[in-house]
Amino acid sequence: MTSKKKITIVTGPMAGHGGEESVITNFINHFADTYDFELYVSQMLGDSVWLKRLDERTQITIGTAGAGRITKAGKLLRYMWRCDADAVIVFTPRLLFLTNLARKLYFRHFKLISWVQFSINDYFSTRDRGYLALADEHLAISGGIRQQLMDIGINQSRIHLIYNPIPKSNQTILPENQETNFIYVARIQFNQQKNMQALFDACVQLKGAWALHIYGTDSTANQDEYRQCVAYIKRLKIESHIVWHGWIADVWSKIEHADALVLTSTSEGFGMVLAEGISRGIPAISFDCPVGPADIINKYNGFLINNGDVTQFATAMQKFVDRKVYFSATHVKKSITTLYEDVYYPRTAELLNKLL
Image 1 (cartoon, helix red, strand yellow):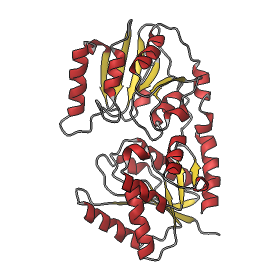
Image 2 (cartoon, one colour; image 1 turned 180 degrees about the horizontal axis):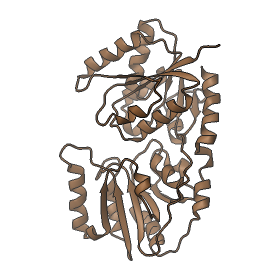
Image 3 (cartoon, rainbow, N blue to C red; image 1 turned 120 degrees about the vertical axis):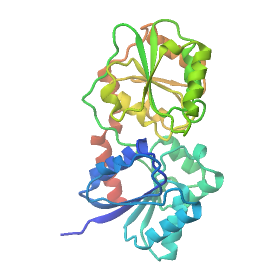
Image 4 (cartoon, rainbow, N blue to C red; image 1 turned 90 degrees about the vertical axis):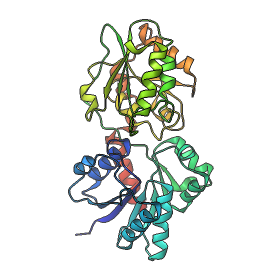
């Protein structure tokens, strides 16, 4: 019997309940019968419960919490000394630099693959972006990331556009007959990446019966982002329309009605929450930020708004409030067929077989 090839995944700090954790979990669990997996998490910033959902055969190593950059680098290099993987998939440019250094120092011959989950231009410095050229191959989760990789000089033949896998959902979340319900499912950030200030600026322009339901948490120690949001909506006098639900582990099971999912991020890597909502029949309104939403939103499932155009965003929301727009939940679900797992995994399996 032929032995399985081994894949090691190396990630940066993990908060415990983000999109990266979901992608890693789904990827490992799907391919666990085909490949042996090791996972190296440089640091756990929060809940580690998600690690228990990984296939039990997965070997997991956690880096040093609270350590300085040199200490963290040293631990990864020591870990790589015993690495016997056929391929190492790395999530950040700096970790890519270190794994490539280990490959040279220890005379290893594993294939080095990047799998960046964020907009390269928005998250990484010019120096760090340069480290991406050290990878042999690149997995791109959006057309925007593919273009960014090409813009820094990486040959298109080494870039493989795979997107991210979206589970098909049997759940369908429909509007209710009375009030128009918008949902926001993401971290609480006033004017950082998630840019909730722009969302509130759009909401203040709405007329009619509407509510914005916010599902998410503020990861700052003193809840600064949440406090800024609360103060701002009071200033806008829309606090009676805002419902705070906090972070909920299985959030979709708790959402009974929704007219549209809204996202005003300044950048994404893919926009997983958009696809998760669409898979449940919920249309989406999102800024056309770099990168990801343009790969997900189309005329069958929502509105892609010129990046930063709050007035246009409010106009799209108002169409839902006025019941002037209708998206069939069935058609919304079908609009992202190429992203669903039953299409994604065969495509990705073929690619991995070719690369390894």
